[in-house]
Image (spheres, rainbow, N blue to C red):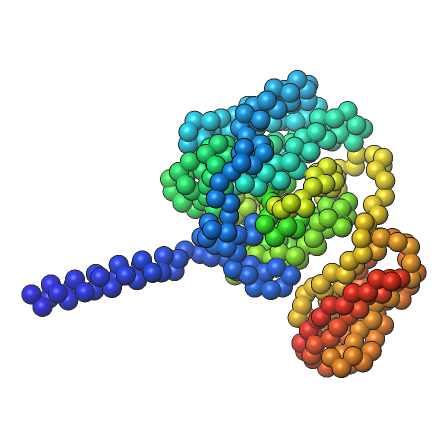
Length: 417
């Protein structure tokens, strides 16, 4: 009897342990936003906390599956698009895919870009960016013609149609977040379909070079989810920085610098589509999540789409020969947080100005004493950055202050020897 009681107590303790600690055996990422440790995912929602998400949809958050079907009828009128399905959702809805090129039936010699959106139904802004990308690629502009001659874009505009129709903010019909389900077997139907599509395209003569996973974040910022070398490689991080900053150069006031949101600092997670690309194809594919703004101030989807497409082409080394876009002029002043912070031996400080003016950047210690003038020049409106490598400074807290006309802004940095 004592032995039975002993085993019963052990079993009870194990059950209690598993009940109160459900996440101990699952990997939770360490993410950094502007150098600060955070406990929410890349879309700005706290892990496993649906209370921080929407609880119901209003008219499918403004864009339903029927809306998609209506748009498909319009898109298929273009000679530059082929529409098919990569598979079915849990409830049997086709997962529609657009193949966009100058001859979508003959794409063997085309370089490949892949885009998928609306994994989380509430993140409608990600779809609107994707919609503007489709508009650009199907247009008769010289740039679009040049892109179609060289590339094929595969675009899945609504990856989770069941969630959209059922009003689930972040889940499919089985109440599973298919964004973070790539290491669970058997796969959800949507995950299985997308993975099969990736495998097929990666086996083709011209495999995917860029894979964009389009979302929108409750942080109300536009940014890329940057993967640290702790989960990738030093070479890949340089590719990421080149890619993100190349895109951002077309919309610097709208898209955050590459170091805004840093993930994978403690290894490679297994649950994401980008994880699959990294594990199976490494540095051969730049596979990243882009987060648009999920808030009332969202907008400028056309500017974002233009930046994404032009930046992708630049990264792939494809020259369109088109320069019909006006030079970018920032709409506001802004001083960015230095990166890295804390730093040693150097850090980068960047800012933007909306006017031609004298621009001064100075460094102060904690007592308010001026330590150094880092920048002091008359410059036109634009985006600027400098690398600061302190000499003969002691470790500690410092403040850098930007002055442009009547505009002043100060931020804190930490130097650690």
